[in-house]
Length: 243
Ligand SMILES: CC(C)(COP(=O)(O)OP(=O)(O)OC[C@H]1O[C@@H](n2cnc3c(N)ncnc32)[C@H](O)[C@@H]1OP(=O)(O)O)[C@@H](O)C(=O)NCCC(=O)NCCS
Image (cartoon, rainbow, N blue to C red; front, side, top):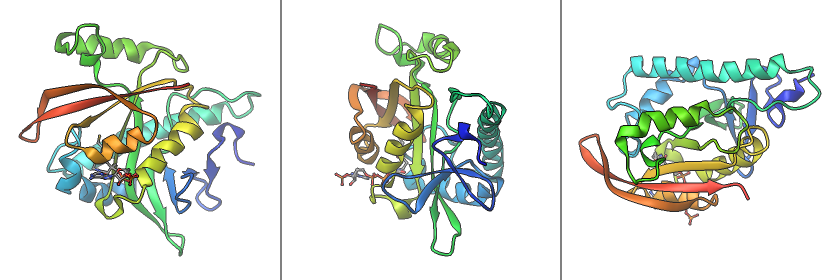
C-alpha cells in the first residue's frame, strides 16, 4: 500500500515514483527531477526565449550546470520523500519542508513521459524588498535568513515560486494550471503556505498573467531592479495571501 503521507500524490505502479496530476491538463504530471533530465534541461535553458526571462540560471547553460543543479534539486526532493516515508505510520499528515514533485512531464499515449518544464517552490529570495524602507540591498541576506529560519508550517513564512515551460507548450494554459494545482493540492493543505511573493520582469506579460489568474496581485514595481544577461531589468513583485 502507498504511504498515506504522500497524499494527494499518486504513485506510478511500475516505477514507484510519486507524481501529481494537473487539475485540468490530465496528461501532464509533476514528478521529482531525474538524472536523465539533463539533456532536456540543457536544451530548455539554452533557449533564449526562456533564458532571457530567468535571472537565476547561467546562459549559456552547460552540462556541468545541469548536472549540479539536478543533483541539488533531486536531493531536495529525495529528502522530502524520506521525511514522508519516515512518518508513514504516524496517524496525522506531517507538514513537509517543501513539495517533492516539480518537473512537469507530458504523458504521451504510449506512456512515455517528456520533460516540459519546472515549477519549484522556495523561501522568498527577495530579502532586499522585505524591509520597511523600500529596496534595501544591504539587509537582503539578513532578511532572507530570518525568513529561512521560520519553522516549517508557520504562516509568517514568505514562500515563492520559480517556473518555466518549454516554448513548444506555451500559451496552452499549462503553467496557470500547474501553479493552481501545486498551490491548492500541496502548498496550502500540506505545507500550510499562507503568504507568497513572486517576481517577474516587467517585460514578462505571460508570467504576470499566470500569477494574476491564480489570485496574486502586483504590489510593487521596481524599474531598474538589477542587471541580468546584459540588460537592466524592471521587476513586478506580486503577492498572494491565503483567504
Ligand atoms: C511564463 C510562462 C511560464 C507562461 O506559461 P504558459 O503555460 O505559456 O502560460 P499560460 O498558457 O497559462 O498563460 C496564462 C495567460 O497568459 C497569457 N500569456 C502567456 N504567454 C504570454 C506572453 N508571452 N505574452 C502575453 N500573454 C501571454 C496567456 O494567453 C494566458 O492568458 P489568457 O488566459 O487570457 O488567454 C512561459 O511563457 C515561460 O516559461 N516563459 C519563459 C520562462 C519564464 O518567463 N518563467 C517565469 C519567470 S518569472
